[in-house]
Length: 120
Length: 120
Image (cartoon, rainbow over all chains, first blue to last red; front, side):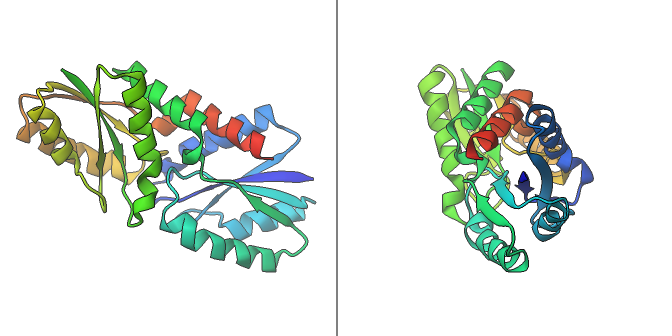
């Protein structure tokens, strides 16, 4: 069974995660055959490791981690690979892959430009 | 003259801003009649106040600030309104308005879901 993890930074204010919950809800409605979990780098639960453990216990063997970040800065270039290696060691039975940050995707950037244009 | 400011968090790693530069380039190509500037909350230049000052000196009198953030957490709910009030005091001749965070927009979220689906 396959799954994706939408991986965000996390924040102190619980309301910060609302778009992440909406992303997961959209995914569930549109891609019900692939499980989805949120995970956060800091300040919010679950951690990446805990989200992978949860999916593993549901029989998932293949997980794509999607960094829901705009830019590929220190968090994604330095912290994230280390975290991912730890998770690979912890869950050797899971095939873990990752994508670029969503902010690197042209269609995502275009949607932001269109949103800004409509707001004028 | 009108302008938009794409307002991001900022990060230590200079490469973090690449998607913001691409956003500004897309905007310039598609909406050349409306000036665009980047601005950052912390760790990157220019600040919001400095970006507004730069646009004001180019004859801009109306600016829409678009928070390029996923969630509306403490930065947008607490820091941003204070910053905006300071800018309004500093530049009373500029009509400043803002939008919701881009992560609140359905089309932006859908573009992220589509990106994740293609990555599977």
